[in-house]
Amino acid sequence: MPVYLDMAATAPVLPNVANVVMTYMLEEYGNPGSRSHEYGNRAKKAVQLARERVGASVGAEPAEVVFTSGATESNNLALLGLAPHGELTGRQHIISCVTEHKAVLEPLQHLSARGFEVELLEPGASGRLDAGQVLDRVRDDTLLVSLMHVNNETGVIQPVHELAHALVDTPTLLHVDAAQGFGKLPATLTAPIDLMSISGHKIGAPKGIGALIARRRNLRKPPLTPLMYGGGQERKLRPGTLPVALIMGLAEATAYFDKHHGTWAAESIATRRELLAAFQPLGAALNGDPVHCAPHILNLSFPGADAEALLLALKDLVALSTGSACTSASYTPSHVLAGMGLAPGRIEGAIRLSWWGRPDVEVSAMRDAIAGLVSPSLQHN
Image (cartoon, rainbow, N blue to C red; front, side):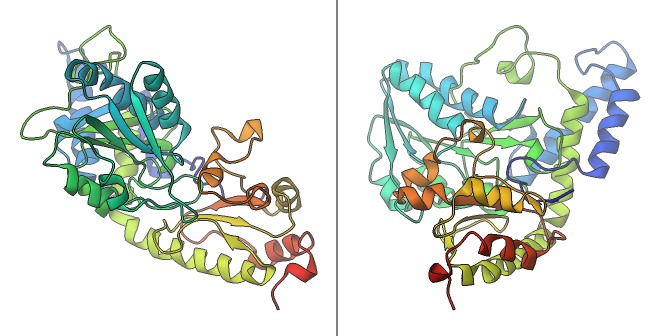
């Protein structure tokens, strides 16, 4: 099998996480809503422990953790759930960015059709907005700023920490899609971010579990309206029986990264440097800010090479992608790279590599495979 370099799409379930999940599927299978017996009580205590672990990772209280099916649902709950409050108060201006994930852009399109004014900022070739650039667009009727933490295609880190502190004393709320940064870059997520979407399968938990962190401001909850009805679970924001096994898997994966993220980051940075050094002689162009970037995602374009041809040449060596797993099936040009204003040829030749730590990959073999597709005149001596 090729070496897996598509961790930004999904990560394998960690062994300890798998053990915990199986325990809560086969042995501790109670419903936390069943309060009349020990099985239900034990499940309820387990879920509370999970809230504490997940919340503590970003400096949030357990009561501020709402478990969902993943970051996509969390994004929808945050964005669409604020709409009634915006309509009631007349604050219907929303600021976001053209390079956001489709799980943010499409709900924003829905809000636009509903009458909201959605302003999508353009970050330029670096892919990173300046905090001042965002704050300059905030108005008296701005309901929300929605900006992702780490871009899933380029790894660019947005200034969410600075924005959180700048907005905390204003009526404008901040939503952050933290699917790619949760667990990996925790320091920037402890800022007073009002609404934060996280996903379990990016950190070694099973698919189908995530959370929305809904922080209180001055003891007041974010003014969210549920999208579904049918029970009082999850602070009356998300009905349905809680998937205890998946929730405990998320808690275990969070605990793993809380303990190991320093080592993980150092090793991932070393891998990044090795890959960049190997591909630089081929004329590889880095797509995204070289300084404000996550250690585990690399987006590169090779001169004169088509992305599909690159994937084909590398398929026996590594498993990687051309961009977001949520849209890559359509083979449309990356809206992220297009939103950065990159030339069509550079976009068409872009591939994304994403990893954890130090993968056992033959970098020299990758370089040789790519070299055969790049014109010698375009390679650097």
